Image 1 (cartoon, rainbow, N blue to C red):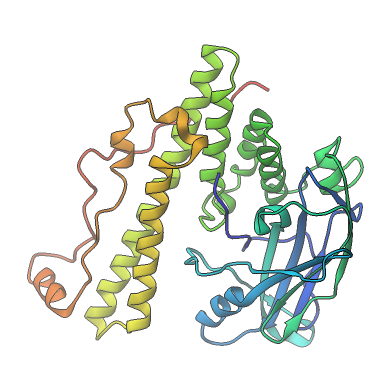
Image 2: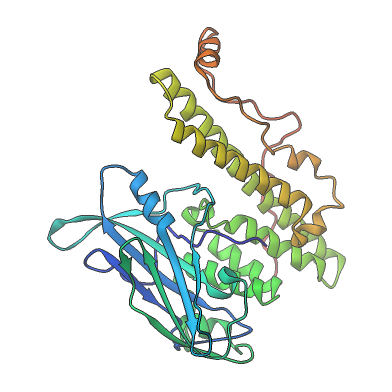
Amino acid sequence: MRPTVPLFAMGSRVPAPAAPGIALAGPPTGRFFQAGPQWIHGVLVVDRADDPEEAQAWARALFVTSTDELGPLPFVRGLVGDRPLLGRPARDVELEGGRRAWAIPFQLDLSEHFGVARRKGAHFVHVGARTLRSPVLALRCDPGRPADLAAELFGEGGAPACPADQAVLAHALLRADRAAEAVRAFEAALADEALRGDLDRGCLYQAACAAGRAALVAGDDAARDAYTEQALHWLEEDLERRRRLLQQRWLAEFHAEVAGGLAPARRAETDRLRAALVEHFRAAREDDPDLEVLRHRAVDDLFDLIPSPLPVPTPAAVAEAMSGPGTPAGPAPRPGAHAPAPAPAPLAP
């Protein structure tokens, strides 16, 4: 399991404000537990500019501040930090009077985001971006752990109402070491193609981690094998989607050079993206303890999906490529890479 970018481009549990600003909501009960999920939900609305990169800049400016009644110093952290954004975090919305705006939804677990346990008692949270600030959200932290995760996340008797809710529940179950339940929640969330393809949120990768952890604690060989195959299937799809994204960025660079030049800032962003993706693949192969069950398998061909360093499409490289027949379709797959395996049968509840 690895930290994710807490942006959901497809929706939010918080209605968008009617004017530029930030709306914020906590758990329905107004509390969270020290040993439980500490999710907050929000949406940033800003006037739409013609430059789509401006939405990225607003997303990067988001930060969350949390303090409690006992601590004089707040915890402050950016939501995105220096991680490259793989998708577009904003959706186009219409405000009152026909005014066009960008809405950037976000959902995050405070304990995961700050990496520290919350002290019991009153807590005060707000989110900001540039000149905008949300109202302060007052929450209470109780000792122990929740008896019913779904009730704490969605209200008494509540249940996930959409795929994004299923993803929130799946992450909470995984953090609570309830891996088998997390696998089933991820299966429900990943039925939504938009969420499945949201590489910033990384649900495919986290689902593979859930299946890998479930395999480690499975009570019999049949269950262990089923979870292992599921982990391989989800991990392979995650790696292939990221590899395809890198190839698409390479093609965009290529066509920009053909059209007359690539801006240095755009090339630098692609270099950061390439480095982040290669690091993602390396960590999956070597570091993540949730994927330990895969390391005794012959999965070298899976990790052949790790992209080779792609050549920077300099004018000379473009001229050489254009001198051959047809237009290049990007770097060829590495030898040994194979198509994603068919999905295994659903796991029994």
